[in-house]
Amino acid sequence: MKQLLILLAFVSSSCFAQEEITTTLIEKKSLKADWLVGIDNFEATYFIKNNTFKKATSKDTLNYSNFQLGQITSANAFNSLKINLFYSDFNTVIILDNRLAEVAKIDFNSTENYKNITHITTGFDNTIWIYNQDFQYLELFDFQTKKTRYKTIPVSSKVLDLTSNYNYCWLLTDNFLYCYNYFGSLVYKIPNTGFTKLQATKENLIIKTNDGLIYYNSKDQTQKEIKTSNMLINQFFVTNQILYIYTLNFLSKFQLKTD
Image 1 (cartoon, rainbow, N blue to C red):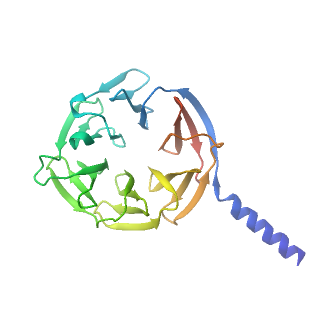
Image 2: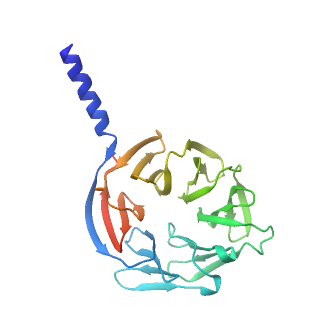
Image 3: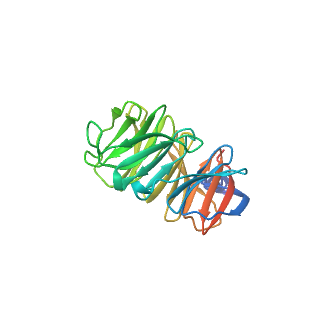
């Protein structure tokens, strides 16, 4: 009986240990930005400062600004060749190349079918995911043809965040987290148990809650807490198992051990 209890205690402690993901601090540096957008595979840093979108490398810093469109509402640099900026005041999206030259401009006030957009993120090829507030669904929109390729089924609660990679798009609402494939078909749907922000890492997610960060494995639908020494998290971003946390003008770089 005693041996059985010891075995159960060992199994229990082993399972509990697997509930956490450890991180190792690699670097911490100063970065003065209003909003961190992301870091690519070549460690170029994308951020917004004084309503100007910036791409900073070890060699130089590129800038893009379009003050006529008002404040930048959101930006996405997942595909550094087709960066998208959203200006909600004018219901307009700007697509930039890797030199921050303007590639396309989509004014949804003047498209064939008017669209009231609140959230956008990167799609595959020449597409972006857009959330149509009037109809409460996602559209995979081709910014070259100005046509919608696919639509999702409408959702019923307030949208909190939207993120994507080339294969999937995740929509976070007050009530649920939805995952869609690039045809707009629902892959899975789980209750929102305190999620506030999302970042995709391959086919999985890093999710922010009021208590910190968790790693969500989409394949087996499990959640694990990410240990970050209880630091304040204003913004976070993930690139190739590297977790970046931006807080109080400092960018911290962590090795993320999810395996």
